[in-house]
Length: 210
Ligand code: 3PG
Image (cartoon, rainbow, N blue to C red; front, side, top):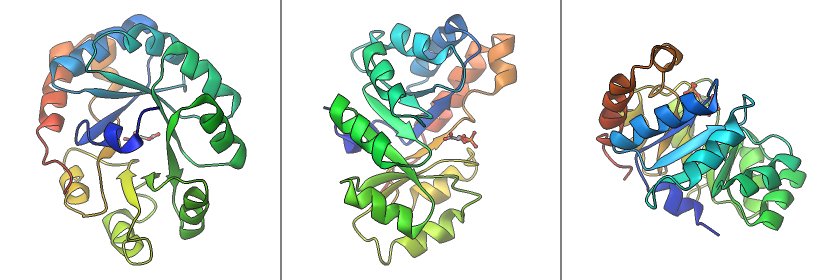
């Protein structure tokens, strides 16, 4: 089983991806890889998600493909069968945590409050997604979490942009950030793969987390 801290160390940004079709997903993933991205969070928000995971899981040895927007335990087995090597969820339930453990899937569970961090810790998750980061208090909230939760590491996601990502990455309790800004829907629909590669290159060059 992959260590979620290994996943978080693959780059400063985990792109959160949503595709209209498997073909669009493959083209976009190739463009991101070309720009230096080595980790993908392919969400299950559209029916194409599982197919893209399957297509990209074997694309390159140094590309780690994960599944995002896990909200139901039964999604875990399907994602693992498709080749997902880690999972991301907007929140955490006992059923979801148990499904991930049974399937041997490294999980980055979402938290937004102190009680949710405590529940994640009870399940053994010390590295969590702070979601939705901007709306739930942003940099100031993460600084405040650093007091009582000195051993917890965060991947803030939700409303993070190329402009705000460096503020998060400068925090000692942030391991990476997540976001969808690398793949604007209009660019994907227009087939602007060079544009996506450029955004990926800029994101990959952001200062690594401390
Ligand atoms: C997520 O599910 O992680 C977020 O929807 C991504 O947030 P963003 O689209 O604001 O980057």
